[in-house]
Structures are given as structure tokens and as C-alpha cells.
Length: 367
Length: 262
Image 1 (tube, helix red, strand yellow):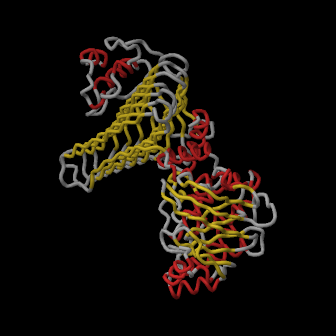
Image 2 (tube, helix red, strand yellow):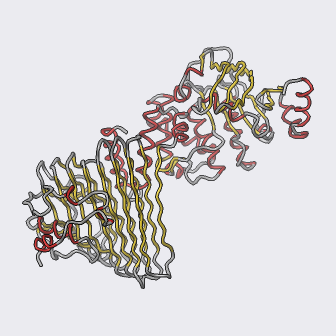
Image 3 (cartoon, rainbow over the protein chains, first blue to last red):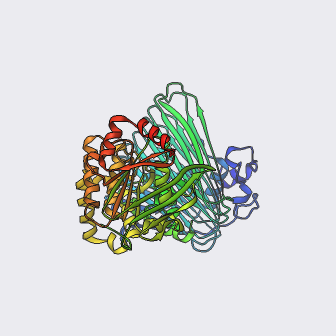
């Protein structure tokens, strides 16, 4: 069945579904008419080196995707919708087996000022090592991004998606396979866009997969940022950690829902998820709902937790006793909170780059 | 050493200070005067008001001053916010320093020095040399700079880091609240050397708050004050600390009761 036919055959999901509890599909559909499949533009994309020069040899971006499939366990509705609207805007990021680069590579996605969509297939070859920053920017009213594919056996990918949209709605769906003994750090840095619905799913179907999912989310004004992260342990000796930090200001709302699924037979799996929310105003709201489905008894561990709270006044006093004025103390604590996950996303040079970016965003949003 | 305006004369003047927290009076009339270059010690049991006094001087928002004055070189500290007091040269080495995960030590130190001593003081080779020298003196490795502030630090590391900050911020008044607790004897000697180097013969002063006389064997105080139930019931030279170490606080409490002080 082609994606458009599949999408049109599905019912509109109601709020009883874990995925759609806080942000109904109607609110993130590009037109709100969920029975339609509108025509979409394409973003301008470019692959560049960390210094702004050309990307190193061994990594390329090519039009088209080798497979239109999404991994088992992905949401059929968004998967089919995005594949349908992105038919003319599909790309494959190919990383040759054994590739290695000293510096991160940037995939620049400029959505322009109109509605657009991108289907990006990640084909990260076995035993390759890559730090990839996908930078999404522009001022279109709607942008959809579907990322499929995966990391080959023994590969290592630090994969950071930075959302810097000026406004509008972002619908992002990730459906990524982690190969045997592959190591993946999947970071999300989000600041911007009025509304975000992200459904990020990772599957470890081979032994020895190692996954860290990290979020540094900054919401301000009346933003509504909803991230769902789902991690599937479908093989023995697989490891995952989810650490998600959201700082919420104004009357914005962030939602973080997590689902850890450990399949029967995934012995020795080790998994945990932690959501941490920093509330910067009385009107800000943060909801975190971690959930577990553990079908295997012989696991190393499987835990979850969530913590919400305002800025710690004792920390403020400590910084003020060192000469920080109240605004500087608050800014430093918000940056520190977000940096706790940011610093785990990759190498020192990538971290420095992300800190500079986030510092600039913090100045603009002014928490 | 010494950051901030020196008005000459007495550095710290506390007069008839009554203060507390949530309607509970803790300090019940403190008088204390410290001259530039002096090191004073306040000793007392748990709950006697020592840490409250330190927090009041630094301006902790949870504590309320009912009456009295706290003057730094003639300037009314109680009129200033905490960060303004810090910039005027007041430094508090905390008994339990706050951890700030995500804030790197190096960035924190640079920002603190810039805030208190000015932007220029936190730049370039001079700052790096000063920082390296202070870290070497305290036996702190360079790798410390990339750690997060007090996050995962041992008790001793936290105290050394507080003293490192003191050395870099060059305060006019350094208050050390139980800095010796959590330190072994080598740590105490190192910290004491830092305090002596920073205070002795200069224009700044230190107020050491402690339970024990151990640190005072290495930082000879000019005066020792005994705080009981929110009042200074005795003051004397360094021999008073030894007497307290040998005989405890009971005798002084009894003497205070007999004199109607405590």
C-alpha cells in the first residue's frame, strides 16, 4: 500500500493514545484538515564541514531514499503522512563503512518561509564514526521531518538535531535502527517553533547496541513543545539511557513522554529514563510521563523517574554571593541545567559549538 | 589582596544585632568589631547562631534582621543585596557549598572574578597565571576546571574550592564557616596557609567560624569569641580557643549564667 493510501485508511487518533494525549494530531497537521494530504515545498539542504567548508570525503547526501520503510513499532499515522507529503523531498545521507572524521559535520536544513517537508534516510555504514549536527532553521509556518534508517554494526554516531525555527509548527518523526554493537548518542536541542510534536523512536534489534537519548529543551512565551521518546530493546545485552531536560518560561508548556520496551528474550538489557523540568515562571507547565513495558525477567536494570521544580534559591544565593546579579544568576542556572544534557551529546568541540548556540538563544529568549 | 573601597578605620562593625528566621530569634544582641589585617574566630556549639551570623552578613534572604547594624568600612551592609555585598568585598566560604551541575568550574571562576574584580581581571595570561598559582598552592589539579561546580566533589575538595575562590576574589572580609570540617590535617594546613597568605599584613580581615581549635593552631586568631544562645559571652586571645578545646563549653556557659549573660 502506498503511504498516501495507508494514511487515508487510518482513523484520526483520539487522546486515549499515549502518543496523542497532549497534542492532538489535528493541531499539528499542516492545515488542520486531517483528511487531506496537502502539497508541500522542500527545504534547501546542504552538507558542510564544521568550519563551513565542504564535508569530508566519505559522507554524502543524495536525492531519494533506498527504502521507504519505517521500523516496526513506529506510528503508522505520522509515518505514512510524512512519507506521502515528502515524496518529492527525500534524501539519503550516506556514510561509507569505516568513515571517520575528526570534526563534526553539519547538515543545514533551511526551511525558508513556507510550509515544507523532508524525509531523510540515514545510512551510516558499519564501523564508521560520525558526529552529525542537523540544524533546522527558517521561518516557515510548518515543517515536517521524517528521519529513517540506522547505524550499521559497530558504528558510532553522535546525532544532534538542533531546532531553531523562528515560528510555526515542527512535526518530527525519527525511526532509527541501532546495529549490533553500535553506539548512538541522539541529542535534541530545541529552542524556537511555536509548536513541536516530535516522536523519536529507536530500536536495538541486534546484540550490544548502546544508545543515549538526550534532550535540552528551552521553551518560552506561549510555546508548546511535545516530545515522545520510545526506545525498543529487542536484543540481549542492549543498553539505553534517556535524559531529558526542559526549561520552561512564560506560559509555555513542555511535554515529555517516554516509553521503554524490553522485549522477551532481551536478557541483560539495561535501561533507564529520566525527565527533569525546570519551571521558570508560575504560568509555565511541564508534563513528563515515563512508561515501561518489560517482558523479560533477566535484565540488569530498568528504571524511570521525573523531577519538576523551580530554580533552586540556594543555588541563586550561592552565585549571588560570588557577585552574579539576580539576572546573571538565573541565566547561569538555566544554562547549567540545559548544559547537563548538552555536554553528553558529543565531543568537546561539538559541545563548545552547542553552548555558544544555546547561550545566544538564551540571550534572545531572556530567561 | 583586597577588592572594594577601603574606608579606613574599622573594617567590620556589628552593633547590637538581633536576627532570626521565620519568627525565631537566633541572634540576640551581637557586638563585634574587626580591624583590617585581623583574624577573628567565633566558636560555639551547634545551634548557637554561628552560621546565622555568617548568613546575615552575606545577606541570605531567608534571615531577617530585627535590629542592629552591620557596617563594612562605614557602609551599611544591610542596605545592600547579596551580590552587591560580594562586589563590596564580602566573601563567605560556605559550610555546605551548593552544587551546580552543568556549570563548569573554569567558567564560574572567570565570571565570579569578572563580577567582583572587573572584566579585565578575568582575562588573559595574568588571570591564568594567578589561577594556576592559587590552584598549585591548594593542591588542586587543572582537571578541576572542567568539572561542574561542587558536583560530586568530596568534602575536602569542596572546602579547597571555597578557599580557591577566596584567593581569586580577594575579598576585604572573608568569612569562613566551618571550613575546617571535612578536612584532614593536611587539608587544614593547606587552607590555613591560604588564609594566612590572604589576610596577614594586608587590609582585609577574616572571621573564622568553627567548632574546633584545630584550624586555629595554624591560623592564630587575634581574637576568639564564644557564641552561646545568640550572644557573645566571652572574648579573648587565642588561648581562649585552647581552653575551650580542653574544657568544653560548660564552664563558660555556667559563668555566663552566673553573670546573667547567657
